[in-house]
Image (cartoon, rainbow, N blue to C red):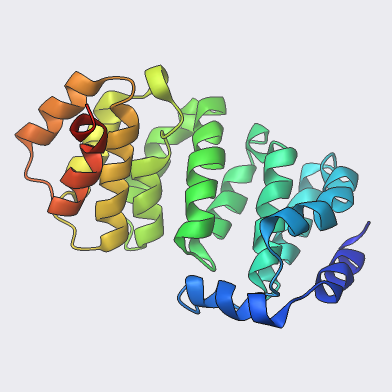
Length: 222
C-alpha cells in the first residue's frame, strides 16, 4: 500500500461525529478524520509493513509527508511507522525527530516521540545526548523543554539521575502546565526504581504543587 492509497482508505473510513469529539478532546488544535486507534491500526497495517524497511532517506521523506497532512491520524501513523522501522537506529534521525517535536506539537505526539524515540536514540547514540539536551533545555520551545525532562521515562536503572535532576531543577520554577506535569511524571516514574532518591529530591526542592503531587502519587498509596 502506498501513501495515496492510505489517504483514500482513511478518508473512506472517516466518521464526522467521532472527528468532532476527537478534535474537541485535543482542544481543537488539530482536525481529525474520526478514526480511533483500533480501526486505524487495522487500516494502516499493510502500509506499515510495506514501508518499514525502506532506506532511511526514503523513509524520512514518507514520514515527513505524513506529518504534513492536515488530519491528526496521519501523524499517529507516522509515529507508528517510526516505531516499527526503529527510526532511532539511524544517526541522521535526530533531525527528523526534532522536526516532529517542533511541528504540530502537542502532548499526544511529543510524549511518544520523547519517551519512545528520543530516549531510544540517545541510548543508541549517547555521544549526541548532552549537546542536544543542553540546546533543548535552553530553547524557548516548551515541547523541547518537556522532552529533556521525560526522555528517560523508560530507562529505569539506566537513568542518568544527575541529568534527570538537573533538567528538573532547570525548569522547577516554570509556570507552564506541561512542564510542571512533566516534572511530576518523570519523578513518579523514576520513583519505581529509586524511591528514596526521588523522595529526597522532592523534599529538598520547592516544586510546584502539581509537580510534587504527581511525583509522590505512588508514595501516597503505600
